[in-house]
Image (cartoon, rainbow, N blue to C red):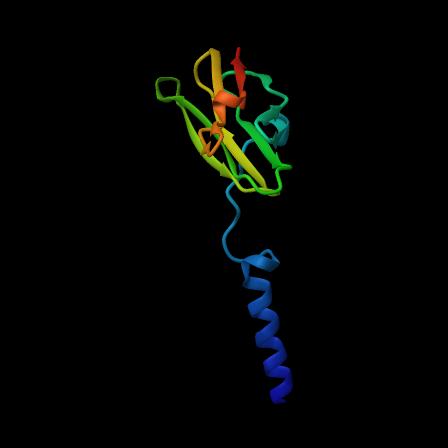
Length: 133
């Protein structure tokens, strides 16, 4: 009888665990069709594409895909007045996701604020723009 009780308790624990659908309900996010998704390739001193257009008030998700093998970069937007104050490190060879909701229309610069022995990355052309409509 003991193996039966153990199996019963183990089954109950698994069914109630979050990994198997039990426990707390996940918090719903915005519907997938409402999220504006982009992939930007982060390379040596460049972002590709270096211009994206988004809609104000809708969530934006940017996957930053680093193809650099040694040099770390980051993704920065310095415009706190518009709600865009973003600073996200992008390690070499890694993917990093940035999410935000642009509230104001306008054109905003994103750039890498890293500095190396050969100068600041932004001075080497590592910048782009987000146009919010």
